[in-house]
Image (tube, rainbow, N blue to C red; front, side):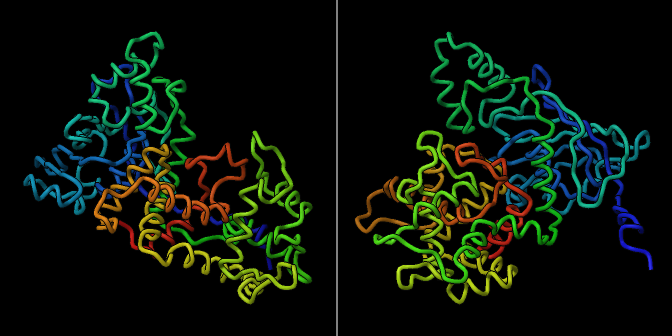
Length: 427
């Protein structure tokens, strides 16, 4: 019998695709992307691909103006409830194939407009046909960074770019503060001509996994669970000795820091648990989740921890259910927000996060007993609580904490958060 290696890799199935050049009208220098998308992609999925490729944040309505393959004029709007309000065709029932004919035999372009106030019109041109691996969207080339959300259309963005490129401009500091609040980026790093093809394809890869979910591999599972599994493995047998005050011994703190690189640029590699929030946070959560127990001055495996070591799949499911089903409604809301931001790769500033959380709390009906506005401290508290739970997992590429960002989410981390999102109910 031939070995699996001798048989060679399993061929990757491919599907027919469109090769599209998408450019934003009125931009100087021109902002454009060339995308390869399956021809059966729906218009809402096409919209999500454009949002990823250009760095939009899906805050506004979108629409398409086209003459389809049959020569009929189409005005399509999404989301669907907005289409009803303006007497347009809802996007959800339309497939990209309907709007584009084969090269040279049918419609060659159409318009996609995002944000009807700023009116960002994208011209979508059919370059040709292609084949892509099933469940794949890819960007093959492009130019210039995407515009800034709510910057006032092409003219407003040109003006903003001009101000941010000149620190002597009288409006520079005001514009820089606005830019940082909207994007979560430093104004000093702004470069209108920058284009990172790899970063765009990482975002499109995450989108592909959302649109066409794939099972979690054992390697992805083990990477996400690594901090918890490593701690459980070290607590197996006689357990981990604690100090008289109930903290981990300095040697164990240092081993954990060295294992995961959890050190701070300023604090350095401390070996006292109180000075290393990541280690303290992990230990306290393992106790809270009853994966570990305190017994006779030591940390020992609880029944759930023992099972987790034996059955990593069971531990994965336990963590999805634990993260995805907190016991308070405010934490459920915050977990839903945190999962969405991580999945979409949004690097929100603390101010943006707090404002979004307060808005969501108020919209959901949360209120203070006195009837006063919800204090910002509430938003920060529930944000910190959810972040600390997620920090017990390795959802992002391994790196020192101070170098991580929402952009570093791994495929395993994405799959974990998608399962959490499904448990919570996506909204």
